[in-house]
Structures are given as C-alpha cells and as structure tokens.
Length: 248
Image (cartoon, rainbow, N blue to C red):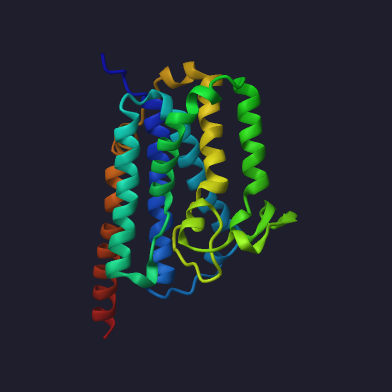
C-alpha cells in the first residue's frame, strides 16, 4: 500500500517554493532587467537565498526515507537538473546553470541508496550532529578553504580545482561559472543532516498541518520548479513591454 503523503511536509515545501519564486523574480528584475536594487546585493538578500536552499536540501534529505521508488525519483530529479543545464547552455549561456540544486538533490538521493545501510548503523543523534558540523566545516570549499561564510580554518590545495568534474564535487576551476551552483561538498552533508533528523523524529512526518493552496504547491514542487522561471520571465517581459510602451 502506498504511504500517505505528509501534508505538513508538503506545506513547508510549499512555503519554501513561494519564497523561492519571489526571490527568483527579484533576481530576474535585478540581473536580467537591470533594476538598481542595492539591497539585493547585501546581507539580507543573502540570508533570504540561503534560507530557501537550506530548507529544500534539509527537507529533501528528511523525506528521502518516505519515498518508495528512490532510484527512479533520484534519476528523475537529476535528469531535470541536466535538462536545465542543457536549456540554459543552448539558449541563455550568459545565465548558465551547471550543477544546480536539482542536480545536487538528484545526485544526493542516488548516492544515499548505497550509503544508507552503513550510515544506518550510525546513531541518529551523532549522525545529525556530525553531518551538520561537516557541512559547516566545508561550507566554503567552493572558494578554496575549509570554513563557514568567510571564517577560514584551512586553505585547500589548488590542485583540487581542475575542471567541471571536480566542480561537481565542490572544487570548481578558476574560470568556472554558474548562476545556480550546489556541489556535493558541502551540500550533501546538509542533505544527510535532514536524513538523520528523520531518523530522530520520524513521527513528526505523520502530523497533518495543511494550508490548502500552499500544500498543493508543495505536492507538485518539481513541476513548479521546472516551470517557474520561464513563467516569471514571460510575465516580467510582458510587464516591462507594457511599462516602456506606455512611457514611450
């Protein structure tokens, strides 16, 4: 019998989707339509962006054990990420997405399939704490250091940062560019943190807290993620055309 979806988790995911849509709309306005919004380059916008990706990655790790077809789901999400890479490379190379969040979530889901039996022997509390500490320690690995948000503990060897394959792991070369970049290190550790948190509190996934439209959005998160940027861009383009046409 198919397990019942948790409306609580769908609701959390739905709120994260709304926040993401608003953030990406602001990103498009600033970077694609040239709006001068200094606040978007500041700390508050950075915290906003991080709150969205932390929520999605933690939640994906937490929900991993609830899925029935883990291989199919992981491959589907990974291939959706690959599709986004292909489309941006072909049509908007200036906004290329390589190793975006869907690539990360798909790869993490697939990687956990062989690792789960061994990791399952780790006490959940120790696993959650250890995974989160490893995430904090490797948060700045993309920039060549061990540390968190600019606090440096050690500088990593430059030889690790070679090509686009090492970029997938977390070691991008100097000329690497992606508008959405989530490598396995450090983010797989945050995914694992969510997985261990589920093992600590599996009963919370059975609770029901529903906000009708928001919960429905969370239930269709992958479809919304794939479509939201084209829809946002089309709406902003239409609005820009109307405004500039009206003032011409």
